[in-house]
Structure formats: structure tokens, C-alpha cells
Image 1 (cartoon, helix red, strand yellow):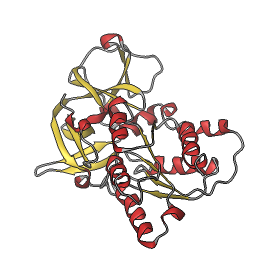
Image 2: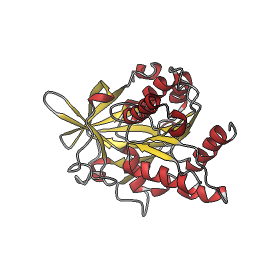
Image 3: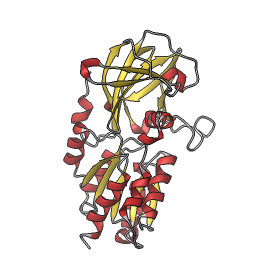
Image 4: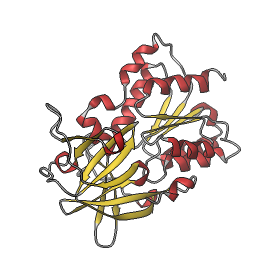
Length: 300
């Protein structure tokens, strides 16, 4: 699969694979995909979640197969079609789909945030919609789909308890995370860790607007001494935000932590090239606090 987008830095673009399921068009960020293979027979797992078709072992690696049609409450998939094998949050998972249409390169600004009628707060499984002349492509929230099947794969909030007793910390932190659920969990976790001076935004553009407003008012240090950002976000992604911050003389010294399900080897190299100070996979909420401690407390 052509993934040239991984070689480019801070363009605010992504490549979306369009696939079909039950006649409808859906999308997934190419950066999540390892490969696409023809359907293979799977071994059912007793007492597993209804959306888990089973397990199989291509190239001696055990992979869980998920029936995406079942996840979307559209029935049960028959044998056939394709497996989209993904890697995010340090998990290899295959999603069963009917067919693949192709790859589209789009700007995050072209992705429409779902309205409340489509995706209500923490319950929706759509992160965005791409409008083409003849159709709409719904980008699915694969992280939420997997977490709904197995909550243990989500943010390990219990890790915060292992940090022990914490004191109030007034260091101002700016957060950019478009998922309402993850935004809340990150804020709650940082509050438990003692960080009380938080500004949380829904995407990189909102976070950048906060930075620009603080620069204009001369209050940057009062409101932003550390940035935590997701990668995948509408309007402006985390890599573009990182590039803008790190190429500005007034903001280049603000530490940036990329906290994303997409932190694999390729994306780590991209983040490093952009100047990110740390990069963590989303389950590691305890490590996120430790890294923020190192970046903002050790340098005071």
C-alpha cells in the first residue's frame, strides 16, 4: 500500500481508505492500516463478544477478527470479502468488510464533524464525514469500536492511582483532543494527578487559536506551558499543530506531548522530525502524567 503521506510533515493532510459495508461507504485513516488481505477462515473464540468473529494467524501472528457489520448493528457478515488489518493502541486487529474502493488524500479541513443527530457525545462511532459529489464517506472511530468490545484496551485510568499521593500543580496545560470521551478522561486523569490549570480544546485549530490569542495578549506563559495533542483531529491535526508551534520563535520552547493511538515507529519518526518532545500511545495515561512531570516540573 502506498503510504507516502507518512514521509511528509505537518501538511494537515491524511489519506483515507474508502471501503464498503452493506452498500454504504466508510473510511479509515491509512496510517492505521498494516495490510489488506482476502478473507480467511477464523477460529471462533468461546464466550467472546458477539462482534468478534474469531482469531486467525497469518504469518504466525495471532490476530483478532472483528465483524464490523455486527459492530454497526447491520447484521452478521458472511464468509468472504476482505480483512483490513490495522495497528493502533499497540494492537493488531482485522476488520471484516465487503470491499475496498480506494484511497483519497484529503485535508483535515475537508472533514466535517458529525452533528449531534449522528454522533451524540461519547456514544457515536463516527469521527468525521467526507463529502464527495455523489456520496458521503463516514470515517469510523475504530478506537471506540475496539474499546466498546473490550474496555481494557482503552485508557488505563487506574494507572493514575499507582502514582501515589499527589499535590496541586498550577502549571498551565493546553489539551487538543477531538473525542469527547477521551478529552474528558485525559482531563479527569490530569486532575487526579494534581494538574488543575487545564484548557481543553476539540482540535488543533482551536488549540492554535488559544496560543495566538495568548501571544496577542502577552499571556502565553500564564496559560500554555505544555501542550498535549492527539494526531487525528478535524480542521487541524496534531502534526500540523506541532509544526506551527515548533517553527515559531515565541512558542518553540513549549514542550509538546503527542498522545495518540497512532504512535507507531513510522509516526514516531514523523513526530520527532516535527520537534515533538514526547510521543505516547493512548493506553499509557500513567506514563503521560510521568512524562508531563518530567517536562514541566524538572525544568522549573
